[in-house]
Image 1 (cartoon, rainbow, N blue to C red):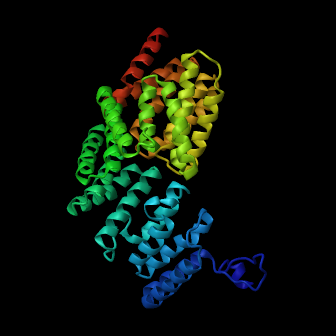
Image 2 (tube, helix red, strand yellow):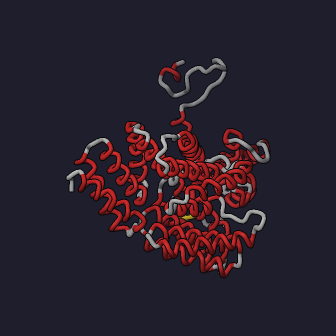
Length: 441
């Protein structure tokens, strides 16, 4: 009782007085004491916990709750100095299920993954422990960079991605070098460094061609095409997308159109050309393909394509029927949240804000934009920040707030010019004309 009053042990729990548990800070303190003064005992204790957790947990957990003991096993394995075993036997084989990346693609568990990966670093996220093989180090760097990006830490993700690329080039492992360069291109694009994005996109295509991997040759070209599109180089974007889809048809004749992220990029391009009917036809097919797989991000992105297509249709046909657009865009935002990809969530929120503005629900539009802006600014997501300023300008104009509209337009214009975000030049001119019509420029 005295120890409880001084908060050195936990209060009585639902199990009664017989269970004693130290305060978490005390547990941490004595854990560090044990680790410092009796390192062999510390390692042995962690080693036994590692064996116990990996041996008593379901082989391939299906939920995050079921997966938690395996994440703990990885942590104990690293503390025991059994890094390679923890990576190979638990994290890669059972948590990620190898190249299926189950825990992130099906569970959206980026935070839990990043916590588990910390044990493989001496200094997060810069210096890996020496005990891992070179291939294992490259794998950890790649997954870490991807997780950091998904959690909205884009600039922090670049160093492990770059280190992974250098390892893969030194190994002449062109397949994984292509993946690494591709990830860097996507990251720099979202940041708003289109020059770097284009450089890495081209390197990704080059490495993919050297690898001979038909899937990578297709997917890296969609990254290059998307970079062309954001830079406003639409003719090059179209040619590259068509080349990628030709490769898709040759490689998978049973499903001849681009799908997943690569199909989303092409749909984004087609929507920019006003081809909403093509997008609707494509997204119906790709949704039917990815939904049974349980791929959270892919499903959400297809819903986003459908929602944007129906919104564009309603606006082009001067219809007040926003039911389909509302349904799909709500599903998209909810799906992006569930997927855990903070670097993709702004896409859905920006589209839904446009929908709400078109419906005259200005408060809801404002709420979505107010959620996007801090995500974009904290994560250095320049493209989303510029898009947000543009949508703010349109929303302020719709509300008759000319001064605020002008300020948002000015900020968007400055960012778009600095980044070379040529895709939005037309939007800048349109809003400028609206401001002139209102006598605000």
